[in-house]
Image 1: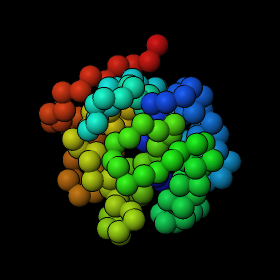
Image 2: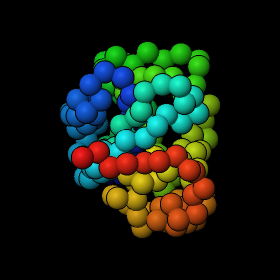
Image 3: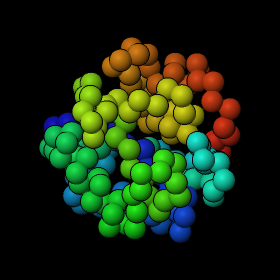
Image 4: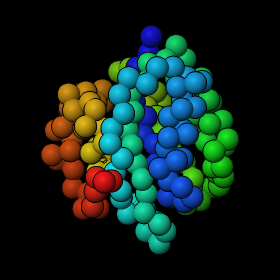
Length: 161
């Protein structure tokens, strides 16, 4: 059984409902949802001229390989109305990123694990810290809690109430 940590996010449409639908589809198609963080609200990162994001981290247990996981995640995103373009940081109904897959380091054209920007984004680290603060980043060899302490990202991340 493989353990994967995912970050879900979206900033258009019914954001709470999109996160809920994504979690349901992940559970249905990929495996057991072991943990879910709270939902956090964050201003857009990279391209700031767009609506705020809702973000949530989850831990899943899956029989799928990392590449099978990616393929199914892309299908789930598409089924929930995600339109991919070559432009980075665009508005989206749902975005599902694989943050970690076991303690593996994967460097393929289509898949980089650990996700290369975990340590510089509070909107990733804060929900991930809620569910996996002792998890060790296999490249940086630091816990999520330590990475959050060291993160210099100034973007405000608020708990959705």
